[in-house]
Amino acid sequence: MKNRLLIANGQGFWGDTPSAPTQLAKNIPELDYLTLDYLSEVSMSILAIQREKDPHAGFAKDFLDVIKSLVPYWNQGHQIRVLTNAGGLNPEACSRACQKLLKELKCSKKIATVSGDNVLATIKSSREGYVHLDTHAPINTIKDELMTANAYLGAQPIAEAIQKGADIIITGRVADPSLTVGPVIAHFGNDLNLIASATIAGHLIECGTQVTGGISTNWLEVPEIYNIGFPYVEMHADGSFIISKAPNTGGVVSIETVKEQLLYEISDPENYLSPDATVSFLDLSLEEIEKNRILLRGAKGKPPPSQYKVSATYRKGFKAEGHLALFGGQLAEKAKMCGEIVYNRVKSAGYALQEFNVECIGINSLAPGILKGPQKPMECALRISAADSRYEALEAFSKEIAGLVTAGPQGTTGYMSGRPSIRPVFGFWPCLIDRKLVSPKLSFEDEI
Amino acid sequence: MTQLLLHEIAYARSGDKGANANIGVIAYTEEGFRFLTDYLTEERVHHYFLPLGLQSTKRYLLPNLLAMNFVLLGVLGQGASTSLRIDAQGKALGQVLLQMQIEMPKELLKRCVRP
Image (cartoon, rainbow over the protein chains, first blue to last red):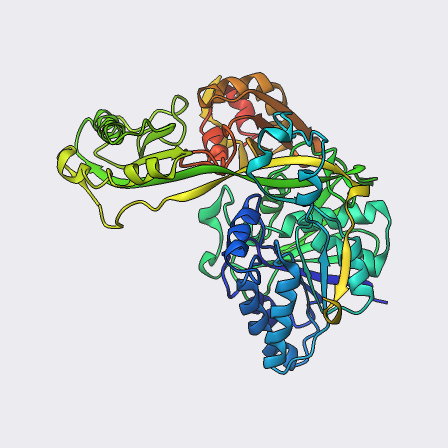
């Protein structure tokens, strides 16, 4: 039995740098598990649109490039196992595509698929409220517009897949830290404090380079940021773990970067909710045992909530935004007038825009009313945005940005990227569902 | 007493959860944390961010990390995916808070700055 597990993150979000997985494989030959996180709150709705056009789509296709990049390492004898939520809305299709690719590359791997997170049909046919966690509004107010609804599954099916010998585990929606918790349960057991510790480890690495110096307050001090390393944790059976980064890379793992990421996107630190445990951060201790190696101890776990959190998305009209640069004096006034030109021209075309916003980036866009902008700004980026339930209204808006180049103030420039593109908007509807209405399903490639 | 900006004695990170944002604020020293526990109250932070139209502010303390977590409810309007603001995800709110003007005894400041 192993007494330590090395678990890394090689994609913090969909669109992260493609070279990260091989950076980790190359520099950590003994790496046990590689987690790849592709899903954000509304990415399921983007996948839903892709699946509407093609029933074999609906997963993060970039994942296949990662698999391809890892094959040479597997052929050299590396034992890295891959855990990913790249399955998105169609984990079965993702597994089939992965299987096909590996066959072509003559690489033999056992692929497991975790599904059962899709609860759209259950919610649509139910009379339950599924109230919005923040606004407490019942879901029937948007039920006709619902596009996706997925429960955040936990680590148990992932652990089971590992125990059954899976090399690659592809899931739909699971809680982000559960990708890290899965192997810890499989190798070290089900103790709640251990699960709490693995949940914190997963929380720390799930955003990739955010824990190795990226977006840190003292960012300018981070060494060799152009070669920033991706993170890994060394989990111990007693629940303590060390967080570090790939050797021979830049970036930094310090008390400061770890504390910042611990607090990233959390609410109550005494009750961090995950499907695997309710976690308290309040007895955690951090110790720098070597440069770029921070030891964490003291995670406390209580039983998880009796319900799963659901991430649902719904159609909410369209939006677009146009950018121009303005140079000269009295910029705030000029920017406001530019907004009025666009708004009124769209109105004359027959559409009073439902939502409209004008920002002067460089003067007052970041924190209007809180921070004073520069006294005499001579340049700003003008950003005009609109949202509307009518696609045609946004089309009219999109056609009115360029007109500012000749009708706007002297010093208007930078119209290079063409008309603003119109994008669908997806609302996010977080709610809860009883566990007994959700059936996590584990299958292997020959079964899907 | 001396005037300074919060970033001289603390660092931070912010992000989004639906229509809410959170800002983790971490003191560089224990004395800085004790000072901020009294000074950087829920009310003060709520008042600071009022121009952004938030509903309420909740503070959680993490003395073991010399840190506190502020949850700004409703500060992102109807949520990151639908907001028209350039900072729809609240990524910049940590930097905004670190620009807060604060006031503290001069002799205490020396024991609160980054070691």
